Length: 509
Picture 1: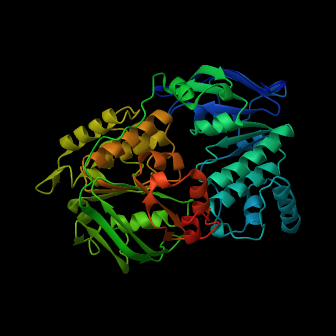
Picture 2: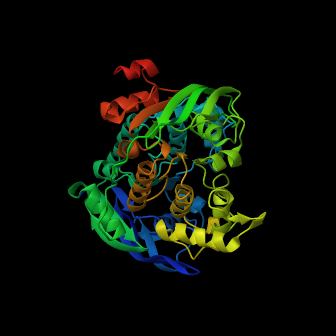
Picture 3: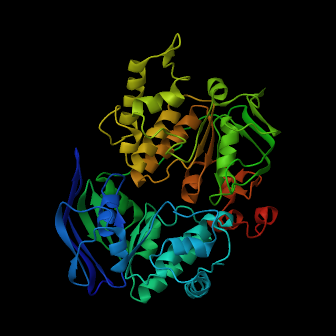
């Protein structure tokens, strides 16, 4: 074990909110130069704990020490002055500004932009994350945007760097680059607190791990000595089921997409260029790609929220092009977008109301023009029960749920609608191993029952687990779908990065 002298010590940290104890008597320490994993399922208390360390939340009980001295930051600026920096899962960058301007906004006393640009160039190259300070953030890939956030932290010369789900938007090659950078930082004495649901990454990178379950520490271990399954089972407190395909006959052609071209309505979005594929009933098509390569646009086109001027979308031979989202749902074609706050869900509405928003048509939740609120509540309760959504009940507002629990509710809402075609963008984004496994199983069950399913995901392991055929979306163009068993992770990573061009990647690059 690498930990020598403790950099950060937590003793008995406790934090309660009305109706829930987020953290209960949490104690552990992080050594200087140690990469320490913080693991737990959704709602285990990881976010609250990290917010206490970063000064966003005050603990009710317990204490912290940094370099052996009492540490109790009242706000993030105090944490940063003490040498604690954090790279959040959701980037806080202004797309219309360039890299240097974005970095300056995150600093309390930024130097002149010319001086700052030089420092960005020097530091980013020293750590193997080269950045052009003059490039506009809106033109950067997701991986490059993450570099901006990391470099912004590194310019503060942090002693502790907290990283929340840092690889969720990266290709396998970008993950390797990030890991090299983190190992270099650790070798220089910077401690890293690393939060991720990707347990094989934890095994590859981290020296030690602390596992939380329902707000309490349940294990401290060396992740290199445990399997991913063992760690996942410690997180959930039970054995983990592996998703299994149920035998189901492949049916007739269900979905045909031909020559789909579409300008993006999203600022700095990606236009779709001549996207074509077809899908049989009972087949799962996995679509990979680094964030920002046309995934949102493809889902908008399939859902009917955007009408594509060029191209054809047919469901069981019937043209869907003129139908909006309600018409397509009625016909049996449903879509679940990636953005759970504001697009997939209305944050201030209850789970019952959010359930009704997309399930009202297919689940018969209206009668003679009136909403059947009793039936809508029963539907929400069914989703909560079947998808293990941790919430006070169907009357809870969507925004009151943790991100992972809201994701479980939204997936349940869509997958329960007995659709003919289901298109989902990032089905297990931000959920823990047990919930991800359960959602993937439900996707496979829907396919076995005859649904044609399009799964858009940045998680390659997920796609390999559920998909029959596989394609990559890169700069708005879709590669020709290929059977999953023909591919390996390295080849997929190159296709995702567009390193060899789409056609070269098809032939092994």
